[in-house]
Image (cartoon, rainbow, N blue to C red; front, side):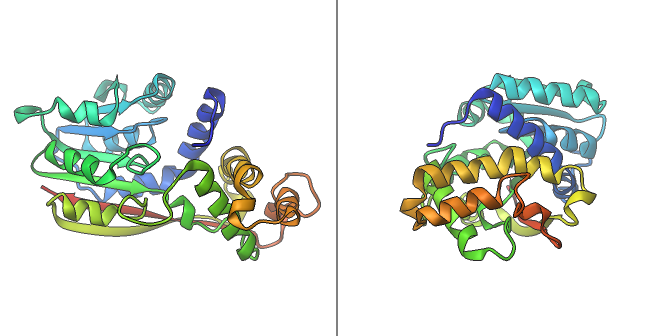
Length: 281
C-alpha cells in the first residue's frame, strides 16, 4: 500500500471534507433521519459526515463517530464544534469491526453511515464488514454506504488515455484489486448479500466547473488528487503501461504554474460520480 505520512493524511482529510461537503449533505438528506436517535458514523475521518448526520437527525439524536486515527477524530470534533453540533456527537478510537462487535440488543443503531471506508484498502473482507454493520442495525435501521467513486472520476478531460493510465497506476500503488468480489465498486452486491431489503443506488455527481468559481476545487486537486496520481505514476506507472514520456507528460499537466497545467485549460472541469447505496434491516 502507498505510504501517506500523518501531515499528508490531515491535509487530504481537510481538503476532501471541504470538496465533498455538498454531496455528503445531499446524500445524508436522502436517509430520512428524523426520529432516529442512535446513529453511527464509521470511518469518520475529518467529520464531514458526522456534522451532516447530526444536523439531519435533529437535536434529539446522538451520533457516534468511530475512526482508527486519533488525529482524524480530533479534526472531526473541532469541525463539530465549529458547526455547532458538538453536544450531539462523541467519538471513539477503534477499528470499525471492533466497534460493531460490541453491539447487541438495545445498543443497536437506527442508522449507520460509512463513507469511503468499506473497500479493500481498509478491510480485508468488505462483504463480511457490511454484513456486520447490517447486524448492528435496529429493526428497520438504515445502512448507508457512500463512496466518492474516485477511480471512476474525470480529472483530466481531453486526456483520456493518460487519465486511465494514472488511475490504474494509483490502484496498483494502493494494492487495490482490479476486479472480483472484493473490488471497491461492489457496494450493492455487499448490501444485498447482507440480507438488507429496499436496497437503493443513488448517483450524486460532484462537479467542479468552472474550476475557479468553487474555492474547494484547486486545493482538492493540488493537495489530494495530483500528489496521489503522480506518486502512483512514479512507482507503478510502468506496470500501468506508462512510458517515460507518459510520466513526464503527467508531470507537466499536473504541476501548477506550468504553461500546460491542466486546470488552467479553458473549459477545465472535474466530475466525481459519487455513489450512495442504502438498505434497511
